[in-house]
Image 1: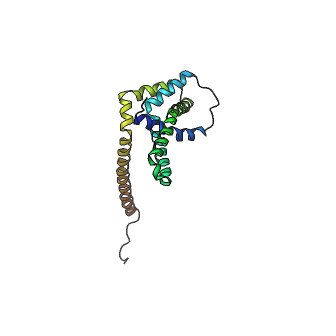
Image 2: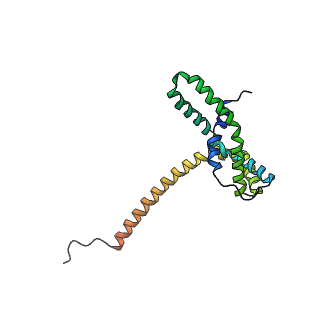
Image 3: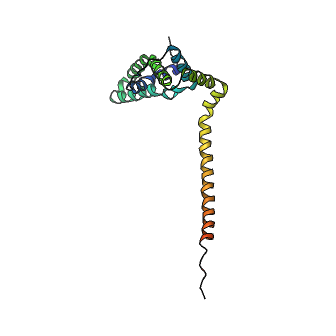
Length: 174
């Protein structure tokens, strides 16, 4: 079976992310299978784990570079060996997905998770995920412009107010 670069990319990130998550304490209560299923659906709809896609790929690239520096004559062999090792770790992606689903199941009820999955699985939800970062950047830029105007106008109003509170002294009192 030949794995696509996307499969490799998604699988390569699992090891480092899984190691970070494995240090977290286990949840005290068991979650029902239906609750976990709802959590997985929400996680899938949110593309929550996409941010971890590059971890294993980046690790493989870094390890190849480190090993090749000391053994440049074995570049092809090292590259193939590290790729094979990374591919062997790729199936652990499911471990990350399951752990994140447990986190969501702990934080949200089954019904909330179903509603989240339904919304983010809709066209509007997908568009929100896609356009959300752009909307956030533009919102912050608009807030900067707005706050500059507010500060400017408050400063001007305060200067004018101070002029009324303490008019300038006359040149001389005769």
